[in-house]
Image 1 (cartoon, rainbow, N blue to C red):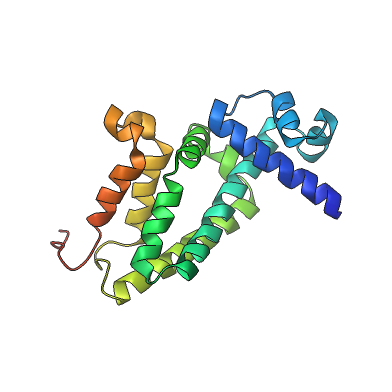
Image 2 (cartoon, one colour; image 1 turned 45 degrees about the vertical axis):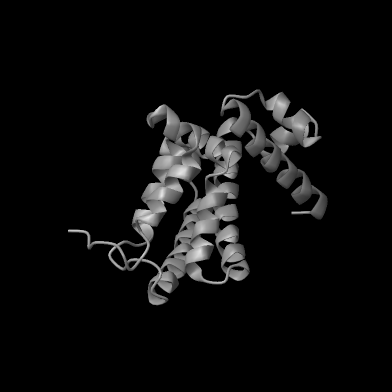
Amino acid sequence: MRADARRNRDKIVEAAAEIVAERGVHVPMELIARRAGVGVGTLYRRFPDREALITAIGDHYVRAMAEVVDVTARQSADAWSAIGRFVAWAAAPGRVALASALAVLPQEATTGGAEFAEARREWVERLDRLVRRAQAEGDMRTDAGVEELIHLLAVFTCHPNGLPEPVAADPGRYLRLMLDGMKAPSADPIG
């Protein structure tokens, strides 16, 4: 893909992710094109239909999560701090809105392609390495791992509308409280 075509594609996906977070997945394609600063024809040349665009947004979101895991790992003093920073990033209001907008779609709409499966696998592997490092450093309980962390993220970021009002209003706060339950060594073993 040519550099200018790649830039247009990236602008469209980033603009679409922003506006989907603000207004939901059924936002008019014309509004996405306007936000991206491209014509509607350019949008449809890159993404022939809404499903293709939503798939690209899901792929973009998962790749961003993998990147942030790496960035927080590099910028933090230890793995536990990196996990906390990653969780705070994931629980930011715009990202929670995007995750919850994507979560209401049929799973195949955001996870249908091989690229998405590879991006998700890569993200989970990076997060798992960070979790294992935090466990090896003695900061994270060893009877909870990456799966539990991912489930907590899903509950608080993908489904905030199913949570009680105070929790839905500030999922990051409750995610941090739950994350504290994964901290070692004061934790009681899980049965």
